[in-house]
Each structure stands twice: as C-alpha cells, then as structure tokens.
Length: 428
Ligand code: CMC
Image (cartoon, rainbow, N blue to C red; front, side):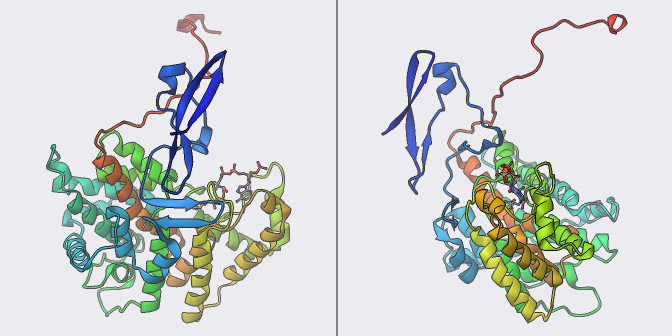
C-alpha cells in the first residue's frame, strides 16, 4: 500500500493512500487529528472524499458518467427509469422475476393515503412545489408502518423504497393539480412515467392517453437525473441518514438541498434567463459580457460544474432529445434557438474556455419539460423525482454499513476568543 507523508513543525507522519476501482487516489486521513492534532480545511469540499461508494462514477475530465459501471449513454438509450432505479438501488440489472416483483411493489404503493390528500389543501395555491414536496415526503413517513413501528430488525427497506419511489410522483402530480384547482387524479394501470403524465394532465371527464414519445423522453430525463455521486443533495441525504434518521426524513432533506439555484433549481433559472434574454432583446454576446464582468452576480445558468471540466455527458443527450421532442410535437421554441446561440458564443469565449465551463444537465432539460407541458415551477420537482433512486441507493449504503458513523465535520473557529458577559446596564 502506498502512503503520503505530511510534515509539520519538524514532525512527519505517513497516511495510507486508498485506490478506488477506477484507480482514483485519496489520502486516508481518518486518524489525522488523533496523530497530529491538525484537521484539514476544504470549504465547499472540492477536495474531500466524504465516503466510499459503489453507486455512480464520474470522470469529470473525460465527461464520463456511469451507474454501477454502466455508461449513462447506454442506459439513456436502452433502459427505462424504473429498471435504472433498480440498478442504482440494488447494484445489478433486474432479471425478469425481480423486475416483475419490483413493478408489483410499486403498483401496490402508488396511491397516497387518503388522509394525506387533506394536507395538500392546507397549502396556499401559490406555495412553491419544492416546499410541498419536501413536507409531504416527510409526512409520508407518518403513513408508513415500517417507519412508525421502527424498531431494530423491523424496518423493511424494499417496502419503504418502493413506497417512496412510487408515491413521489403521485405527490408531485397532486401538488400541481392543487395549484391549478383541479381534482387530484388517482394512478391508473400505466407504467411509471406514463402514470405520472396521466396524473398531471388528465381530468375526470375524458380519457387521457400518454404520448409514447413524450413518455420515452420523460424516461430518459429521469434516467439522466437518477444519480450523480456526492452532489449537494445526495451528501445531504447521507448526512441526515448518518444520524439514524429514517429514509423519508433523509430524502425530504435532499429535496430541500436540491431546491437551490446552484443545484437542481438551475433548470428553472435557465428558462428564466432565456426568457429574460428573449423579452429584453439583448443579444447573446452582450448578455455574455454582463455575465463576465468582474463584480457581476450574474451567471450563465446551465453552465459549469464542480466535477465536469468537459462536456457534461447528460447535456449532450438532452440536447438531442430536445431536438427530437420538439420536432415530434411540432413545436418551435424560440428559447431553444437562444440556448443554442448562447452555447455557441460561450464555447468560443476565453472566459468559459479558461474556466472549463460547459453546458450541464440543466441547460437543455427545461426546454424538453416545457415542450411536455410541465409548468416552470415544477421543473425542480421533476429533477427531484429523477434523483430519488440515487438518494435511496445512497441511503441504503449508509443503512447497510456495518457500523453507523455519524457525519460530523469539524471547523476552524474564527470568532471572538474568551471574553466576559457584560451586564445590560454596563453596555455602551
Ligand atoms: N457563469 C459564469 N461564470 C461561472 C459560471 C457560470 N455558470 N460557473 C462558474 N463560473 C466562474 C466563477 O465566477 C469563477 O470565476 P473566477 O475564478 O473568476 O472567480 C469560476 O468560474 C469558478 O466558479 P466556482 O463557483 O468556484 O465553481 P464551482 O465548482 O464552485 O461551482 C457551479 C459549480 C455549478 C455551482 C457553477 O458552475 C454555477 O454556479 N453554475 C451555474 C448554476 C448551474 O447551472 N447549476 C447546475 C449545476 S449541474 C446540476 C446539478 O448537479 O445540480
């Protein structure tokens, strides 16, 4: 085993270097503090491996993403969302018996408890769907016997995972229906993505038949969002789970983390940016100049990534899907033209080239969702439905660990040193 040496203050220590299955290397500093009295400081965790995980793999320089070893391009082309979910959660592609069993479990759990329907009515119509989603996923735990009766040995992972996966789409669709004043629709005999489209877009009078091309594009969207190693929301799920919190609470926290515009909220922010460019009439080059100004808080949304220093492989697939789905639905979206133009300008601009900023998963995904008729405020909810298998798989890794170790980082304290309390009458 190779080691790395740390020297400080005339002392020197050796630390083991750990090698992953794709040959990536990390210095194991688990006993750094006990040996040296030092800790590391890595704000934003850009250099910190927080865990060992066997779920997904990214090579950011090469633009590679694999789930359980399988390239994302192959899954997007050949798999469907629920098969990919199984792969992520259990580690292998399901055989026919496993596929059938999983499908039956998802069907068994697809309806939300009738008492939960009244919870939706308590939210104002304009409540942010991500707030409702996170609250309702947490509430789901209250309707889950395996969580309510939680005692050592009683927790049934398979039932809980299926309940959460199946009901997240029913909750999401119900959130939308409530916001527009329509009755919530019960799931029907459709497959996962078709059923979601049905619950979103059908009304009690009239039969709704999901368009197979739209369902295919939705499956692909979900597959591409299903996992992405230790991103902000997945790390949140793992951190919450590390305290022993249940799967529903852990994943509800993941939803909150995903909400922010630098993470999942970027898919909404991209469309808002493209709309702003369209209505203001500003040209792509001028917009880019504003983004590049030294003190500008403006970012080219849908560009850049902490890990990818090359094309995000998901954006390449989604760009093609956007073309296909718009052509199929006979839609001409001016925002797609603006997006293409922005990309063209950015890829030739030294600001973006030097910083290795390329389109990420969110750059084209919103255009596809718009074409499907998904309202803007539901975009990040769509990301959350897609990411659920990854969160569950990561929860499982924590849950299955032989020893539960709580995530508890340290800090470098920069506040006041010891000082005395000043009574109220003596303060200036
Ligand atoms: N537009 C303009 N400049 C950017 C952008 C951007 N989208 N992204 C990064 N930069 C610049 C940034 O200003 C900084 O410049 P300088 O070195 O001169 O200060 C440099 O690039 C490095 O940026 P950073 O913020 O230190 O990079 P990061 O790795 O911490 O941030 C990011 C990654 C995704 C938060 C960031 O690229 C960003 O804000 N992008 C826009 C939001 C977005 O699209 N988010 C979705 C990410 S993909 C989906 C997901 O996984 O959630």
